[in-house]
Length: 465
Image (cartoon, rainbow, N blue to C red):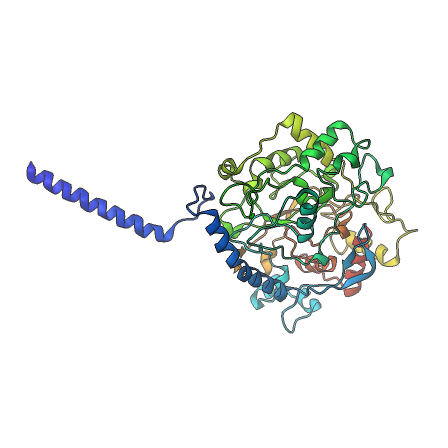
C-alpha cells in the first residue's frame, strides 16, 4: 500500500508539473477574447507615460498612410459651400496605382483589378488612427470649444484626430427643426451646450423636448473618458455627451470603432453620422440591429459607449436610462432635427426644372438611371431604409493595414443623401473624402462605367440636395 501511495504521489506531482508547463506554454498563444481587461495591474501614471511616449510614432505611421492614399491638399470648389458657407472640397482625392487612369480601371472586371492589385488604396476600409487601441476621438475644434464653454477636456493623451479640418463638416453646424421650419437655423451660430441650451430653445421646444436636449448634452462616463486608471484622458473625466459627437444634432465626424465585432482587428471604424432626418430612418446602431431611435439611445448608454462590453461598463460608470422619463424625451428631440433647406427641390424631393442647372438635371437623370443610385437612394429623402452589401472585397485581397484587417464591410446602411454636401467625409468609415471620390467609388463598385461628364453631372446633382 505504501509503495502504491508513493508512486501515486509521484504521478500526481508529475502530472501537476506537466499541467503547469502546459499552462505556461499556452500563455504564449492566448486566444482572442470578446472581453476587455477589467482588473488593470498598472498605475495610471505608468499607462499615461507609456502611451504618451508612443503617440508620436503611432500618429506618424497613420498620417503616412493617409498621405499615401489621398491628396490631402486644401482645394475648395469655387462657388459651392455648405449651409453656413464653409467651402466644399473638390476633386477625386483617392490616389491611383501608377500607370492607371480612372477610365481604364472602370473597364476592368473585379477579378482583373484584384489580380493586378490596383484597387485604389483610398477605397479600402480606413483604420482608426490606432486600430489596436480604438476608442472615441474628437476633432480639435470640438475639443477647444468644449474646453472654452464647459471647461471639459475631450483631449486624449495617446492620440490626435486624423482627418484635416477642411474635409470635415462646418463647425458649429446650423440646426433646423421640423416643428419650426419657419425659423431656419435656430442655433444662432452657436455650439449648443449645457451653458446655453435653455436660453436658445425656451419658447421654441416643449418642456419634454427641452429635457431631452438637456440629457443629450449631459456628459456621462465612456470607455476613454471616465475616472478609472484605464481611461485615456489626463484627468479624471465626467465623460462625454451624445451631442459631443452629434454636434448641434448634426455631426463633427468624431470617430470610434463599432462595438459589435470581435476580434479587434476586424472591427470597423465608424464616423459619427448626422442626426438630421432621424425621423425618416428605421435602422440604427453600427450594424443597424436597432429598429428605433429610442432603442439606439438606450443601447448607447448601456454598452456602446463601452465598446459593446457591459462588463467594462459596470466598472467605468454605466448610465442606465429610464425609458419613459429619459429615453423618450431624448428621442423626441432627435426626431425633430430636420435636413437643411434645398431651394432647388420640389415637394417630391426632385429638382425643379425652373431652378436647376442643365448639369444638375442631367445628373438627376443619371442618378435615377444609368448610375443606378436611386435603387438604394430614392427621393424624397434619398434612402430606402435598408442595408446593402457592396461586396467591395471582390476587387482586393484581404490585408492587414495598421492593425486593421481590411477584409469586407458587410451590409452598410443606406444613409439619406439630403444635405449630403454638409456631411463629408463619406461612407461609414469616412474613407471617401469628397463627393467626387464617392461617385468614383460607386462607379467602380457598381460597374456603371460613367463618362467624365456624367460623373461631373452626378456631383452637381448631389450638391443640390
